[in-house]
Length: 354
Image 1 (cartoon, rainbow, N blue to C red):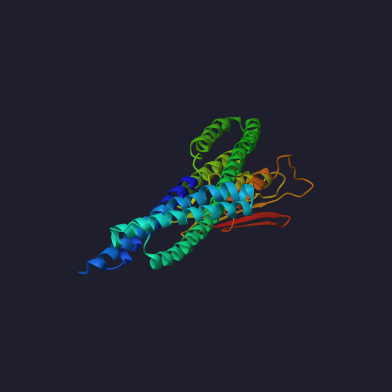
Image 2: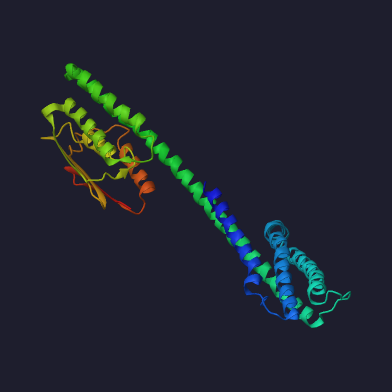
């Protein structure tokens, strides 16, 4: 898509450039409204001659930019390129000579059979040499700049595709990690409170519906992400009951902003994973505020002692995942602060809306 846009802009630029140069002799040419027949003939001579010369310079321009530069300069070297370009310029000067003779004999001296126009011809010849060198310089500069821009666009497109692939992979890791934690919760609940398994499974189905059908888009409204967080927290409330104190405060602005789907849940998951167990009065505090300028998200939980806290091999996968996603999605407009005091674990995430 980027490449097609580049080609379209390039085509418009070329059309405008040549239309301007072709029209320039007409716009700035001598006065054709004179009553002097000689002056009228000379006016038409210069208009026709300069316009025709500009038209025949178009193939010379593209010969240089599309064949000589890419196929000779890069493949054969500077010397071969300059020799070939000199030959092309000499050929164009011969074309100029023939064109000048034709225009001079038709407009200045219609009955002339010879060369004629020695003074004007020499002046025109020098002017044409400079013009050909000008076209060659413009063509070379254009080709070098165009190639550089095209390479930059391709590199940017490749980088975007790489980032999309990496984000897709990171997002795909969330679901297995999330399901692993929730299924562990269901197993634990089936042993302690089997009558609560059914509502937990129902709530889990709501979460899975969101994960499957709502997260295909690259962004979702924060209001939808909020509903998902609430469902997850409700599931944990069913699981733990009054064994844990959960405080969830949220405040959304009148217009919901957008966010990468399932970007916040790993922080909440981590709090429930490590904020319960051998902890006195376990408490989890979650705060979500969305304003016109920024998104503020804070999760705090108490920690168990290092001796009592048990971590499985997947510990930290969610946080490492979301940190990487934040680096890819919001490289310059996010701030993540992780504070581990030994007894409390607090993360604070701020995303500036741009």
